Length: 482
Image 1 (cartoon, rainbow, N blue to C red):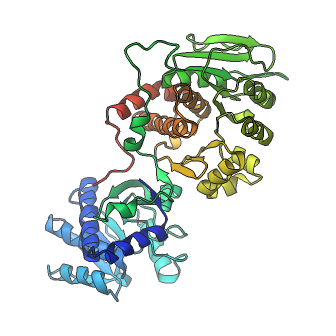
Image 2: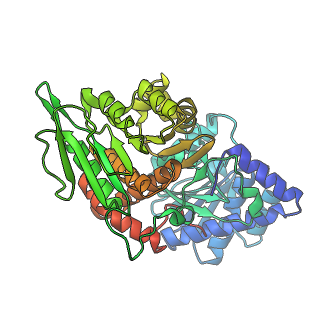
Image 3: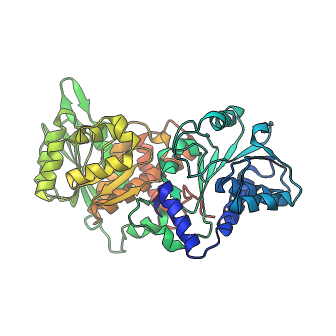
């Protein structure tokens, strides 16, 4: 699955038509699939369809016809000036005796569901005047909104704030970069020839089908030394402060992702948790002899973070560098040494590495992740919503995770989880995207049960469940093919 820009999607539509695929079929399938999503979400609740004059409006007119045939009450208001397929969709709806009023007369009634079919991927700039006001009226109405392809106005402001969005054929960048405006996302196949959707030059969207084969196998003869051993180096003690929880959470994340043994190298006086770990209490950043296949370094390192990372480099093992280990000179040292490593910054830490502000990084995480991977020569996990994984020219955008994960320690759990996958033999890019996906899925499972107020250790404890669901093909995906 690839993440399309609106321009790339329009190109795919055009090429399909050039190959002889009827564009009217694309519109019919889009409207029909969107109607199915409507019925699943809202049942027979009456619909208010707001249709523009272009193809997005045509999709809405097709949806209105299919809802009508299912016995749903439909009110339709449309812009004038339809041509081509949109005009045919309008004529087909009128043939059923539906009255279509002008958009200027649209009104909102309690109990209705608004279908936003005003604008799709074709916008070149922000909405103004009448359409800007109409979008704001939709938002103020307080009614559920189903957006077709994109909430009207995206990627600009103002835009519709949808309850759910049906993406046609492929996901587009606003679906993930402006997820909050889209609500719950559904992906509807509409008949585009599959070769047109297999664009290796576009970022991938992490999917269960792509990630399931990466799960490390555990044979019947497995033992703790054969399934991956992880060393965790982190923590700080000094100046009246002690950062002890972060490395413990990384150790727990490594175990729950499947590590056979975890060595915990942390300051003297660090609590002896988890009990299963082998403890190496040290007075300062030190690399004791470890039997390990991968390291996680820097969690809770504070002023010791840089020293932890440079000491860990002596082991020349695949390494996850997190938190206080994230410094330009550290990344450069690992690059020069040729040691496989995964950087796991949030927007602020990525900004420090790139010489940019956190706001600049968060505004365009795909570009920032790629730039950081190119600059360092290492794999990068740029944490956020969405989290982006980059290595060389490859980009993977993660669809799992939710705001409930915005709590202290969840990033430490992620670092340990990725290290466990490195220790099991996965390459940095694969360990990163699989670890990020399962970590986000664990958060989704917990948020569904508990809402906000999660603890990082609970996320770690949910990792085996997330892994099992992925292994068994029982993941409830963030995007639903229809």
